Image (cartoon, rainbow, N blue to C red; front, side):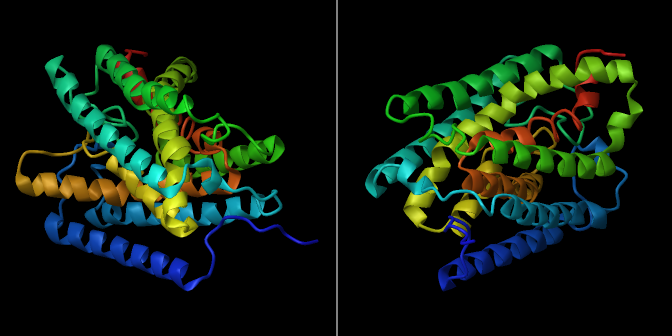
Length: 337
């Protein structure tokens, strides 16, 4: 049986060069963190506070190894899908440049707006994650902060971009329609099971909750994070920007890397970041790229393989980590005993 052609990273010289540059960039970022940190990461991450420095440094790279393994699994699961042309969902290159750069500029302004709106109302600066997400924080957000964070992100990064682009593009052209529902469900469930097992082993805070508390906190965590980070991420990056990256580069490998870098770019100010000194600011920003580029690359890869941005959102974002890892945080935020 002949396997159809499919837009995955090929073994051309350019693709190999892109991958090589990506590996070199990863190594340089980690070396830079090692040099700046000098044995200590000044971040507000209670869930990792007791970890040795070496393990804290290794966690993003161990995560990247797992993400690369998951990419291999997704490739195998989707190997018999019919071919499709995601680049054709974007306009011609001049239009793709305008739309991509315009949306990136809008997204950065939206981030700056979150840095202003949050403190202006007595809260922290908003990011794509709720303060304390996954790694905890020494001062958990209040219910008002959590609700305003979700509302701001949903409106600025999901609703406005979606309706702006929906004027000219169909949902299929925005990577929001399945071309193979059975295979999409299979990918979602497989990735969800594997990633859930990994996260529960690495972040077992959920097991410290009572079943009653989890049953109350879990749906709140799902809804809050679905509107506050899952939909904004899906719409902004993987529905709109990803086809334009592929159109402009012609390279699946470079598109995956750009997807990862954009995902990190949208987390510049995290709840765990330290801004006490220029040194801490530099370290925080660099560590954002070390921490979030890998997950963003996996989301991009899954979307390239399936053509459906919902697959990564449901299989690798909404539940794992934002229910399994964040249910204890949400219980604290809303006073669930």
